[in-house]
Length: 486
Image: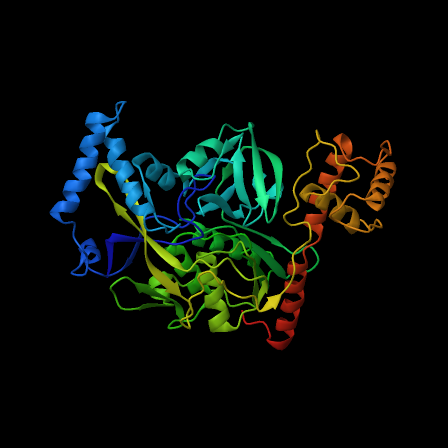
């Protein structure tokens, strides 16, 4: 029996994202623990009369003496936010009514933004992952990039709602961001768009018609249903083997993680474990009666990377530890904590870390991630930033934009001494590129040259995917060793 009074949240991040999408999910009913009151058991230290008096005195002092009028609700919400911030947990946050409503609405529909999820790390918005196919993805934003400024507004120290307001805007408008990547900083202008929340897409491999490619971008309320539809459609098109792509999937709803994991497991196999505050460890096991009887028993592999977080890690660990499924790519993000949503009356909702989740074998992957069984580097252009056509890149420059130019030219087989420094060899290569494209051979990248290099970068990103290529090879080996099961 599951109680609806307590709600678990899973996923890549706590708080609002740039898309106003809470990737860790919302309102998930979970295992029976009695009423919500169990959270406030005998070990909870109550406020003393002195504590309450101190809080009341500060409140009354502000109301009576502060130089300007202060709204009562604003003071109470500030106190609630301050208590949560005192935990110094980046995954816990107090959401006011508007923030909570926007979160709940956007999980299921669409949103206007640039398409990236972030978390607050050391008071700075740090990207978990760009959503595939969105302006942020096309602009080359990457996991662990730090957004320092938006349209000239310094973002460090702001709460997530303020950050979102600076970055969101009407479709077709642009936002100028200052991004820190490692020790380097660079500017990027991104045009906002309407971004539909379609979480599963698939296609037949163009070279081998019995291989189906399935991209799961996040886990929202319809993902399991979408996955069943896509896999069924690919089967009807002749797919007998699958590549499931969890790269840059920052997570989602717990019920979806469990239902989808169940599709790959046999009844009784462990999906995950959970250790809650003040409660015994709970093991979630595969059960068709509980999660549905749709099964994926064809040969398959998974693609993962640093942008795969939380619910993605639950699924990846479940198939790897139970079925020895190949995980191809790079170690995942490492989000092993669990949040619950607790209504706070008319003031909003409290999102609080109260547990950690473990893999089927009992491993806690927090801040470590799920390791790839087959380490394969990504396309070197992943994370390459878009060139700005109104800027000039020339000899002597050295920044992330120059690395984009160098990487594109290198993949096009131009002779370069360095990919990161605009030296004489890069100038010579640029001139050759311009001549081949009937442009004036200035050796400077700007205007049409920058646009053409951006177009080449997109083409090369679509055509070159070492991780998928390795998955393709592994699938063929699996088929040889293990005849078709379905």
